[in-house]
Image (cartoon, rainbow, N blue to C red; front, side, top):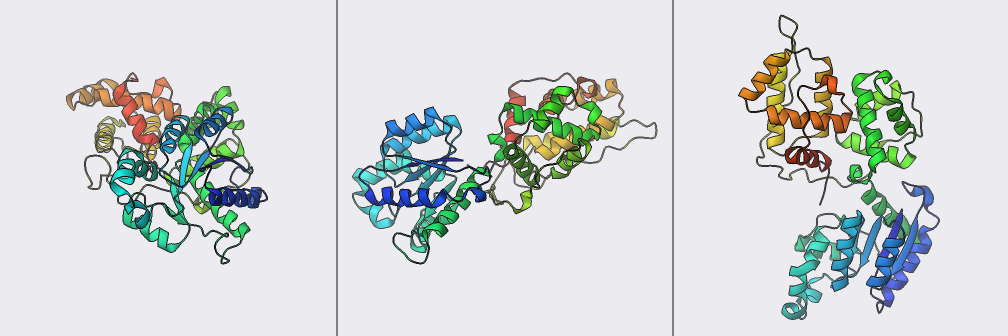
Length: 383
């Protein structure tokens, strides 16, 4: 994990604080999710951009506020997938904001300052008073309190570093699906395929190789995502089937930031019907039952609530269903679901490596499919 601290060159206090924090953190690798911590710092936009371009930066920690360069740095960070943390260092307290408000602070709030704070994974404050100020502003609910060992003896340098590292880990353990690269996403799909089929013979040699090449960090991220999307049992089945053994990961014990429980999603807020079981009729066919299943699945998508668990359950049902293809296709056309089903087939291929022989319709990778994929990918998105 590489953290870039960005501060104002004239701010000697922040410089000293960063130096103390970085030195105290060098001995804490054993507490890091990826077992390697590196702190670097920059006091100019040119220097910060150079560090980002030369090497991977996982987190940019902004110290202080009201710099126009923060806006440009955050834009660069978003393009590269780098995560943002803000430590206002008291610069968002009312007496600061109200000083020269209309000429200096109000324009910056409108242009970038509020957005930077709102889109940060966490806001780190140094005491309860500053915490209350941030709560009153209401720009971000993910507020963490870490006292500064420079100004209080109620916390040691090591304790401060441990607390800050806890936050860094929490940031990197949030929305972990977005941190997987292409090969790791393919391995994740192969694991879901193995967990759904309960038979490793369905996996190609390339799929097995992609799983075996997963790093401990990738496994950690997959397990965390699987736990919070309620498909950890499917991953556990895959591990058993593929005889995978690695260091035990307990995702339920790993802190992370999650979407707000009362966050409004999609067009409606009412509870959706759960996906029904696909049951055979008296002739042994699952056609009618699968049609009803797809109708409810489409309602999940229409309300912006299509989940990875829905897709895994769909894959399980389709692999065991016996259908009259002509009757199913006709029913989907009558209900106006034929395009939706084709998009779902593409999603099943991408997310669970579903083979064409099990598909109910030709897969389509169009704008609607991309919208469904975005819905699934952003299920645990917090900003």
